[in-house]
Length: 253
View 1: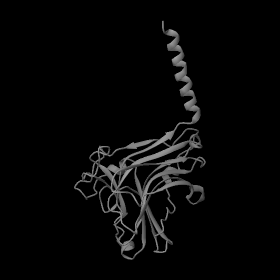
View 2 (view 1 turned 135 degrees about the vertical axis):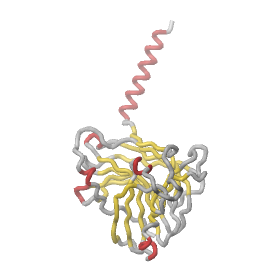
View 3 (view 1 turned 120 degrees about the vertical axis):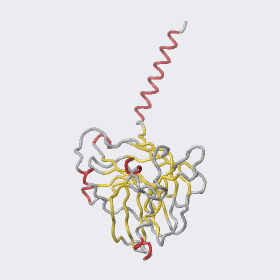
View 4 (view 1 turned 90 degrees about the vertical axis):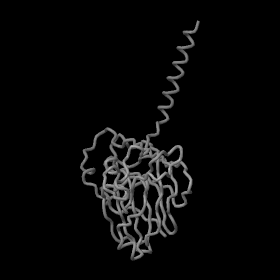
C-alpha cells in the first residue's frame, strides 16, 4: 500500500493572520490526563480534543494510490468512529498515566472503505510561520504503542510546512514511519528546522492510511513540540555559568 499525503488544506482563518517579525510557531505539551474522554464512551460528543487545538483531514485514493478527493479541515472528534479519541482503557504504563490519545482511520467514510479505496486520515495541529520563525529548529516528541493496526494499513508521524501561495503544496517535511509500532510503549522524536518563508503553514501530527475497515489504531501520549535552543544560546549559558563560578570562587575566604 502506498502512504499518501495531504491534499490542499485550506485554512482561511490562518491565512488571514497578519505577518509580523515575531514568532507564531508555539510550543505544545500534552499528557491527556486532563483531557476528557468521550461521554458516554464511544459517543464522541465532546470538544476536548478540538479545544486543545487538534484538527482532522481526510483524503481518498484509489487502491493504486491515485488521488480522488479530500475533506476537511474539521475539529477533531473525540471517541467516535472517525479519526481520534481519548482512551481511558488502562493502556498506559508508568509514564503514560490513565489516559491516552488513540488515532485511527475515518471509519465513518464507509463508502470509501467498502469500495476498497484508501482512506488517509490525518490528525494534526497548525501554526502560521512568521518572520521570526524562519531558521528556528523544533523537535516533535511523543510516546507510542500499538493498538490494533494491521496490514495493509500504514501509519506515520509528521512535522511539515505547506505553502498557501503554491496550492498548499508541501515545502518541507520530516516523517517517522509508525506502521511497525510495537505493542509496548516507546519514545520517539522528529527534529525539524523551518526553512519556509513567513506566511507558510506549519503542521505536526499523525496519519494513517487504511482500507476495507482494517485495523489502524495507535496510542500516543506525552506529546510535545519544543524549540531547540540555538548554539549561541548554549554558549551564552555556559559563559554565564562560568561567570557565576568565578564570582563564587572570589568570594571564598
